[in-house]
Image 1 (spheres, one colour):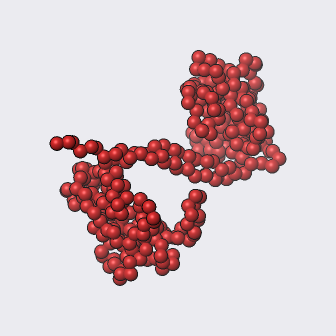
Image 2 (cartoon, helix red, strand yellow):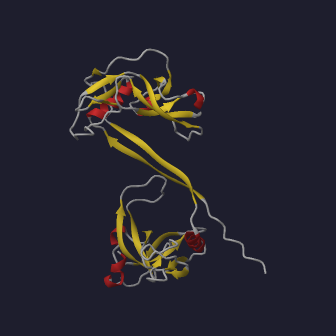
Image 3 (cartoon, helix red, strand yellow):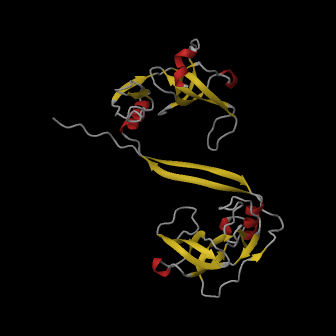
Length: 319
C-alpha cells in the first residue's frame, strides 16, 4: 500500500499597509519644521532635562511642556545594533547600524541610522554628526543618517522660540507590514474546499459549535477540532455596516454593505460583502447566498436568496 502524500503546504505573500495622517501640535510642528531648516529642537522638562525628540507632556509629572531649546547636530552613540540586510524604504540601502544618539545638549537619545563601513567601525561612545538630506520637507527623514565625526562637541542647549516660516502642521506616515503567510491544517482544508465552491468548518467535540473559518481548536473548550462539517451555502445577515469610503486598489463603488453572515449550520458568523440589492435595503435577518466569480477561489459577494427574513431568535446568539 502506498502512503498518502501530505497535503500541500500553502503559502502566500501578505501585505498590510495604510497611510496614517495626523495633525501636529506646537511642539512636534516646531521639531519637524526645524529639521527642514537643519535645526534640531528639544524640549525642557519640569526637572530641567532636555528631551530629543521632544514630547508635549512631562513623562514624570504629566504636565504640559512647551519650553523649546536648540541642541547640537553632533552627539554620542549610547548603544547600537548592526543591520546587515536593509529592508525597502529604510534610511540606507547598504548595511548600516541602528544607533541611539544623544545629541550635544540633550539628555535623551534619538534613534536613527548610522552610516559605517561595517560593525567593527561602530562602538558605544563614538562621536557622530547628522548628515542632512539634500531635499527636506519637515520629516524625520530630513536627517538622512548619522556619520562618524571627530570634531568638537556643540555647546549647551540654547532657548528657541520655535518660530519658522511656513510651519509643518501635519504628516502622513506610511505604515507597511509584508510577510509570508502559511495557514495551518484547519485553514488549509477550508481554503481548499472554497476552491471547490464549498464552505467547510470544524465542529468542537465538546461544545459542538461549528467554527467557520476553522481554527484547529475550540477557543472555548481548548480541544482540537478535526470533524469537518460543510455549512451553507446560504446564510443570514446578523449585522452589517455601510461603507462610504473607497479603499485603495479595491474596485468596488461606494456605498456598499459589509456584513456578518451566519451560514446555515455554522456556530459563528463570517464576513462578506452584500450585493444584488440596494445598500439601504440590507437588513438584519436577510437571507443571502454566495456569488462566485469565474475562476474565483472564494465568494465574490453574497446576494439575497428571495426567502423570507430569518426570525431574530434564530440568529440572535450569532450577533
